Length: 323
Ligand code: 13P
Ligand code: SF4
Image (cartoon, rainbow, N blue to C red):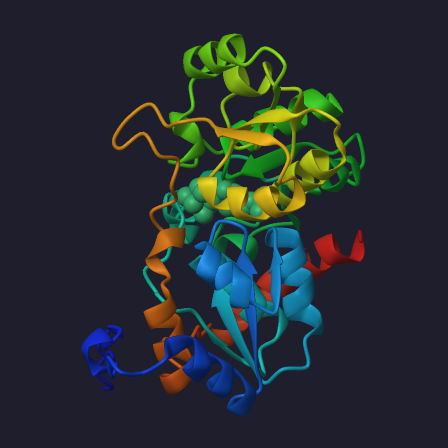
């Protein structure tokens, strides 16, 4: 019987303090033929050295088409896992294996499978923020930027289960007029924004546009001038003539927003508890030091059971085929 391997712990104390980390990362990414993909919620220093920065959909599109031998995924686990589903022959690594997501973590595959038995005649639309096991049980995957289009692609006479984000699900129901059964998941970052807090900010900044991610509660989204994925929020800010924006999503996005609109005032919505900063604790586990170690050691590596990968691939490909 084989013993389970010990979990990988980044050996931060093995880093020579005299090393120029940025230089080493540049050297190693070439030596490894690696592409560095980063989500908009990563620390600015990681976004700035990535080959590509994007939202979940854009990152999965990049992962599907890259010719690099190694994908270094600076994001959270479900994103790196999606890259592995799409590119099984490539080595996919993530700086910190503990970079999870409250949505994915609170929808375990086995529990989801048992719950789905109540809805045998339903199509299953799963938000990409879920595990490969949940994807494998799904008809089609969506991200926040294409969820409306994905749901509209399902014939009107078909009943739908939507998982795991109840807020995104409710928002899609409102946009499409479709009724859906919702798994009761939520994002621990967006869940902390309250209508009261947002209304106060709007009163304080009457000319600012309120823009929020669809993972927010409906009481917040309904106050917004625009609701969209991280890429859509950036696009909105780039094009809208307003001079101030109240931004209801993880603060990592402000890095690209400031670059697009250095003239605009960007006001992040504070969380209503803890340190009041809307930081995703999972995204922030990735650091420059861990990124260096990942490139040096090609660990920790995303691995997937092949049967699950094949089952999860079809719904991801159905989504990508929608364009
Ligand atoms: P996007 O697809 O909009 O980048 O969202 C990913 C995410 O995890 C939001 O919390
Ligand atoms: Fe998951 Fe929320 Fe973090 Fe996005 S911000 S990765 S949904 S916990």
